[in-house]
Length: 515
Image 1 (cartoon, rainbow, N blue to C red):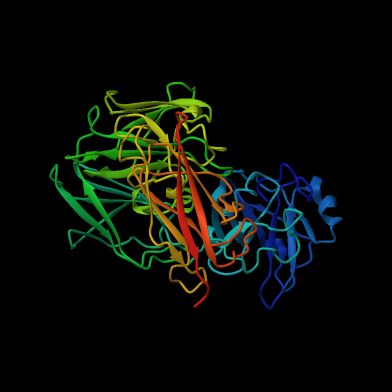
Image 2: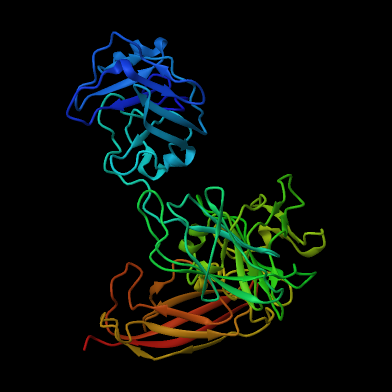
């Protein structure tokens, strides 16, 4: 327990728990603990630690508090344990039994890494491996003197992940998100190359790249971490020694500044071509806030006609929007992007302005009930529009849903694919489908269904924000979700534009009975 504050349900004190898994008792007189200094021994006069027995090492003032829990306690002048991480050595008669260096990453639980929860060994694998420890799930914050609540709960189930790769004049720098158990094997353009470890997570592949040449650096599979997680496939990294973009050569094409609760902002960049440009050293800033600018350290380059998304949480972006290409998500911090208004500037390493965007929440379609999770997309003319509902309210790593241009005076074109449909769940013509095209940017559509007596039998619960082209549908159910009786129906589609214009379209749908 390196960080007992604030306490959850245990005495507010650091402690170390020992367990004897062996068949024989162990004398505690020779037990000592070291952390950043000389070892501190328990001393004589204490009964041995029997097989399958636990003992909790605490400082003298906290002995009674832990003893009141009905557990065995051993007073010891424990060295101070740093909250952020520290090295601990357990010795027996002067011989090292266990040496480990824990960090805050060992908790593997953001909800429990702020204090009051102990670190528990999960019961298998190398005790010196952080992937075999996790925050205690016990309601009290820990289980001192008793079997660990985290026993059998794997903490780390993912192989090491590549954080970034940077190409320099002398070679490639590779960084992983955790320590590897052995150096990985690399190939450069299908030729095996050597790599030099730099620290515990970084590797350097020396070679002399030619500027403007794209290289394929492959990290061969089977590299892994100390918890036994190994990569199952090769990782191929395209690398290019390129210059940074100049003004207008890369621009901001999509922006999320008001994510749903628990979500994350993102900024999408687009390179219209024809050249490729380095992202390393570019600065992303919000000049209208006091947040610090962020200098990109990714080794990625942005190719011609490529979209890349900058975000602190790529997993959120991937989960929240359809069709996302995970290879085009770049993990990086971003400056604060307030929900009401702000600005984004993209600067070259020498400070040259590449692109800039001012935004406000009022840039969104005024017809939307909520803009949480809805992105703003840049139109060809430079205006901004809310991403279409049909596109999942966002198109990160993909062409924008409002990218086909056109003003709000355009007339949308609607066409029913088939008049007759059979909503019987057989996978064939189960829905009444309406194709639309040339929808003005920011348009909304509502679909209503009437029987021949003029009674409304179904409608969409809310208007859909349209893309430039797409599809509307009716599944043959009424407003309560019950299938309507077979027969003809009138389908009314109402289209609304942001400037107040509206159009109505009447179509005929025939619900056929089951075959």
